[in-house]
Image (tube, rainbow, N blue to C red; front, side):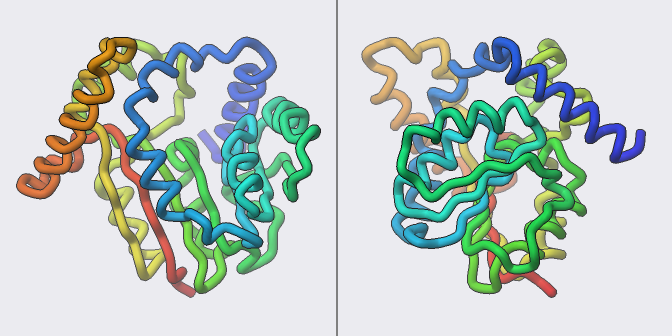
Length: 250
């Protein structure tokens, strides 16, 4: 199937998703274990975003865009879905923030070279052609800028089983990251830093409403880190990876 046809399918899927009740809301319970991920991303960008031009790449309903605009960033949010952009604009309309939302093609955006100090994204690249999107990110980021993305990994057999059992929650063309996809980043950026999250912590989802959840979450997070340190090969079986990219190649 051509990229144009895939693009249209993705646009239709996400317009339907945001126009109607979001079926992916059923997955929210799994994201209770992403506290450490959010903390890592927020610390990575932190107060360095103030007065910086930030692109929210695949902004969805604009929550991340609004979060960083409230911290002082000059934010542009783009998404394939016009329905998502409409709702993002409504969410931001009663706030005095330096923020705008646009419908745009993430693989071939309308922005000029080196337009942004920061580019962020959550679970968007695995919907895209990686070479096209990597090249676009490398083109858009300033030479001293930073790109930070959170993406799902595709090696864990239990997670992949869940994906096969719930096909309606995602598009046909999604491709969770492989290790070779991560290696490919080195063709577009001189500095690539990868941080992996959530292996043993995934087992905590059924206990998210119990009083002991936080204590056990911290303990299993330490176990995840121990495994990464002493058995680095295990990283491919984690659920998520945060990519911090800088120094774009020409």
